Length: 224
Image (tube, rainbow, N blue to C red):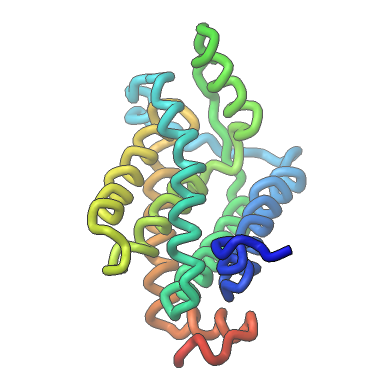
């Protein structure tokens, strides 16, 4: 049986397995470190600014939509097989490694607002809080992923300008949603955005992206 052309193209993409590794590595970083630091003391970075930030439960829709945004932009940024794809994948791996180190050295936690009443909204917020517990907050992986999703495509002329501009606006909206759902504090958001940009720049200007491509055996696709 012949597979559909889009499936064959995906299977043949040099970035497919590194992208799968990216997902698995994030799960290990986020959940694995939590198991290790469960009994440790955690720092609460909540400031007066965070305390004054309104709790808007409806913005959980933006918070959840981030997962779909990542799925689209991680594929756009990682599956074209060029040097930009390896830069993106290397930046992602570097950032998640830094997150792991920070999660271990500086475990963080916060106290979240009560889950709101209401069928759909209450259920969705409750589900998110069940899956995304109030620890491993600094830096925000939500914000790291989102900023990197924008960085990875912002100079790609083969992607419509509308989507590149939307990606920046939506990335900022995701950052706001992490605050207005009380999932994160401002320090988490800032650290996530800054870390993503630093990793993107490092991967593009130090040869890290090219090295990461060669690590995955893509010598012909990754120039020095």
